[in-house]
Length: 361
Image (cartoon, rainbow, N blue to C red):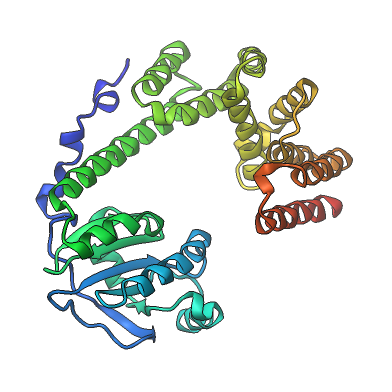
């Protein structure tokens, strides 16, 4: 039976939590409560008439490292009217203050703004990030001249809103509505993901035709989740219906690039999870079946080849794995995807790590 509540959740209803005290645009900024200032003078409150950016990051976060130089550029551009605070949250390790200070020192002039550590009990993470429903970093909050949160989002996307807030032309009411809509969409996604997880648990003993139909309805009502649903159906067919799985693969290989991407993602995720997930390990022969079929059909995509090499390696086909990984690196050198030397070097390291792993077996 299709669960209409999950599939047609009202955005207004899903976002209603924002009206009951959750943090968002149009609300007063919480207090600044940090354990230590790593760089720059302490900022203990929001001065009226000045704009503040409070950005959350962590030393282990790759996207944070990427966005930091851009935040520095914005801090310099608006130095007369804007104060930028970078607050490290959700750190891991035995010496968090030491590792944060080392990170900031290593960044040098690339991280040229006020930097602080969250408290040991995570006061900033709780009163800012979690209160606003922000579960990922980097995340930035812009506090306007009145001490009100005007905008929340990814720091790489804050150039325009920051300029408008500085100029006094920013529409906080519109930002509030947009934020509520995004919160509603996130809540809907959460509920749908919970239902998909339940379907996986029900599938072995349940009515598979009905459950497959429910998955199709979820995809139809949530276009942004079509890839996840397709991956789930592949996994379930691989685990419970080999004949249906082979037909799905055959159809998708004849399909478009999106279908090819979904098949490759199935192979990649199966290989990645095989060591720690018994279901994924049992699914490896099916992942290899897909990899072989896609290679036969022809592909020179280095990322797909990387996934295929992982599936071969995890299934014990050492020579096949090494051969495919070598081809992945060869194709990467010719691919526009890796035209940036840094991204090519990163991919090369991933290839070398995977080859080293399989060479030991």
